[in-house]
Image (cartoon, rainbow, N blue to C red):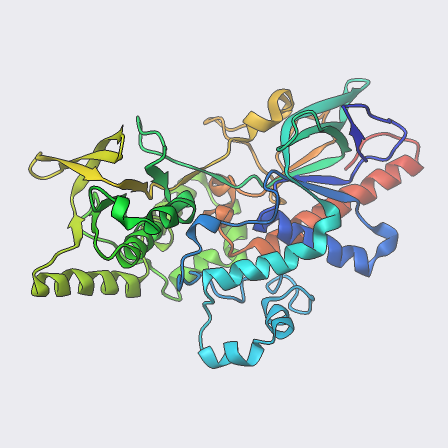
Length: 454
């Protein structure tokens, strides 16, 4: 249900779910709901997704040529929940005419570009469910005799602020993704980029390399995105120096060994959720090297070989400034000036650069920024983080009937896969099951003439 300019017809049914954001997480949820609706049309859920991008996109700025996924294709949007679904990666390959070719690769890891195409292939099926180019600006609780039974989702067009829409929802799923994290005191600009924007910015410089005054790029960070950015810039700008700034002595390999990978299994989410707070902290600390600030081993070896071969040739374009920290970035008329201090000697270098690339990671979007007044009814822990039930629904006060499902930002309750692709298929099924349970409970109570939901 929608009405322009904020007008709401209370006689219309509310959506069973409005998903805010339509990246891989809410796309997987759309697939789970669609699979249910096809199986049981009598109990179909009415859903809508709102996405501020004008078309589907997932980390487009890092879809580098040749970069592969760090997750198996079997951990697509559906296989681990239902390998019979029509939305598997293998079905996508069959429709694209590449199934036999992919099998001959003898690899579990497609390129990032191909997996993005798979996501787009899935998303194309949900054009009628999704409002692209819409920025959600407000979530307003709707009260009835003291109870919050519904919420109003207010959105506006990203191209026409006067185009305003309000929807009523019984449940919402927050899938707003991650926001770039920049070093303290550093701001992005024309020549200071987060890796999210690498492919949106660098090609313009590659097209006019004669305009590169400093012939130098500085990349800050020690994770996969940092290493991939270094390799890409080194390959794309053959006359430029690439300075990689690391607080470590070098890139550290990701632990992708079979036993360590069990932390990404769906069963590990159950175990983590039931564990004590102390055990959760221990597990996150012990297994951080499966995901955070680590790099694929083959890429590490490739970069090391490059450094060594350039030393042999006597022309060192790839410089690894290890055990060093970025202390500041100054925007200049023709680039950016990066200040880098050695952690061992205290010596400071000023790197005049054509661009500074910040591979400094992401942070979760705080749900209270979007939920506003409604967040007051959400329960939090001692650190102010949302308390989240096993079905990924935020625990709320007793007078709230609206379900708020978090697609990410639940590492403290559900473990390291909170913001990763590994368990999206299973998580979407769990959320769908929860929605159905609440939907059935609402129907039963309505038949009994009573308000509220399970």
